[in-house]
Length: 442
Image (cartoon, rainbow, N blue to C red; front, top):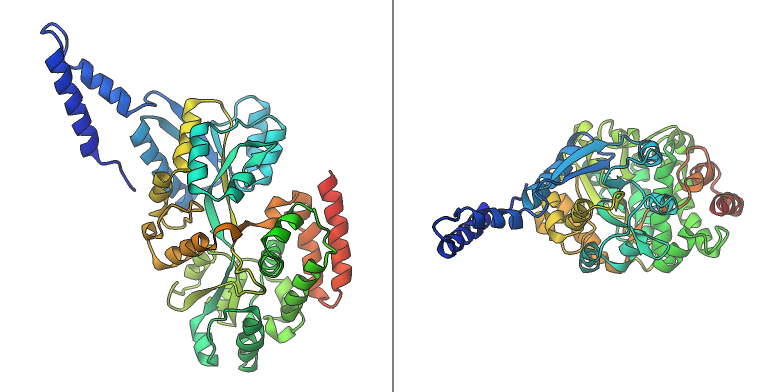
């Protein structure tokens, strides 16, 4: 935990006390200056702020260390409430009852628009906006906006453009990390398959893992501008750029020996079982998923950085893809304390406090990678920063949940069906477009 140097506060208080003592009459209490300095040093003394987020366990403990640093700096008292996995189910009744938390951390940007439409959010103050402008690319500012007003700031990120691999499997087959999709498919995966090891364990029973795969392929092959258009449904899912991305995915889906258990096995494997198949059971060589795979690697008995290695998602086209998930902070009560907390979370200072804790990545471009506790997260943070304006948010989380986030429906279902029959690209595109058209017009 990064604490403010107590010496600075002590010196300020001492100087104020000395000045008061020199200027006051003998009858005046010499503590007046000290009280004023204390008040100035702790501008939110006596203020109570409630913040609600989904985190529990280690994630909650790390976030509470950030809150303690904010308390130490401002004098505010911050209480934490866990929403559980269904943030909307927790916040909905509180909003309807007129008793929302001061600050909420939303797990997807789509909720920013939803709550803004309900007049449940407060626009961010110029002080918070100043931190956003200093520390974030314009894309992230737009992501937290609705109706021309900025309501949210991305405070925590998940890096979804990774391929995890088992070092011993690579060594046995004599293969290396791949920089391009063609190398991944034509050299690395093919050589692994020829050696008798399934290249990929796919977690296709968890439909969101397939949307993550599509997003990386599409961002790299179609580019950031088309990615934004498809995310907003400004171009249809029948567009040729989608065809290209699905053709690339079919290079995996169309080869049974590329997937552990073939398509049937992949569709019966959820997340994180696929991670266990790579590192615990040692049945496959690679799993395509985000930085949070690390937790399951440890549970499988492997060591991150030794047997468990990562490579950046290979370039399919001109863009090196960096897709992020993440959590957006918003203000639900119009109070000085709530805005101050968002200002702190959006700042370089707040980000660097958090970066020292495990399991955290900052989208703040001014948070130095040197703050991270290990080489893995340092490497991931450097990737985010170096990608600059090309970084994009998880497309399925930007879509209406009926299309991008519901088991057995929309994009999840259609990509699972595509895995079953990767030859029917045109048919899958038409079904994706029909589902999107319904969801985006509601």
